[in-house]
Length: 386
Image (cartoon, rainbow, N blue to C red):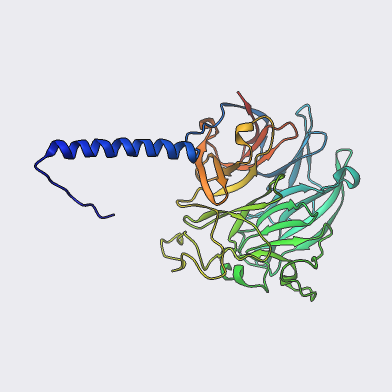
């Protein structure tokens, strides 16, 4: 910004003018603070453990009876009942590929779980030379899983054990959405409609392409399954229960982490448009925008490494109604984000006692916020008003 220097023999007049301008600036700042919500305070909370000694957990979901299912990377699902007693289940698909960022990833209940007891998981399958994100489902009843069936696999195979993404979400229309990463060394695939890498995919609850998908042709190719494209490694996927809008967050490289508001057929730019740089420091793209590519709703540069998020709708924290709570790995914080329209009103880390690598987050049946920490000896934490 250019600065202009002024001098005047009548210093008193200049000083008075500066004081007037300063007062006006303070008034304007106060107005902006009120208008844009910067003065809002995150509620005082208490954090208490629900369960500890989890081994590299990744995803969680809550059953209608308020018990929990938690995935562990190495191939276990832990069931935590109302008495906080745990049962470990390892009778899962045999082809789970654990190295790198692989292993067992997300877990999601069928919208009609009360009727059909279907549970869905995402996981890395294959081996070092050929691996892929895979979706399977089984019935869970009487505290046991039965009849695992693979219903979908991302193609093409890749030889990198990273950037699987793997988040699952049943959309309001009953379709299953899957975030698929770009495989790191395959980032150009994020722009290709003949590849499922770097996409959000949309399938039926049995793994079929849906004829109302935006690029559907009926020939069974990758384009039949694509909902959105131009993603890097998206790991947060939520639907607003009020507006029915779907949001996604994703890892950029060194910077360029994003929240995006999803709409079918939209291209979100990676790797043509990004605010991030390569880990070497080199530029990935010269473009800050590009025709027919949508810029993010929220951008984090430097990176926070967002791992999951919720859009809070509940009675326990009315002051957070409609806000995002984002778990982050790199900053080891919970981030509070408020967006109205396209304006970011609040975006900052909160809850000092939650300084840990945070993997997943869920709003429980009781309206409390449940947070899954990352790594060995991890915990499921419950956040309630103080």
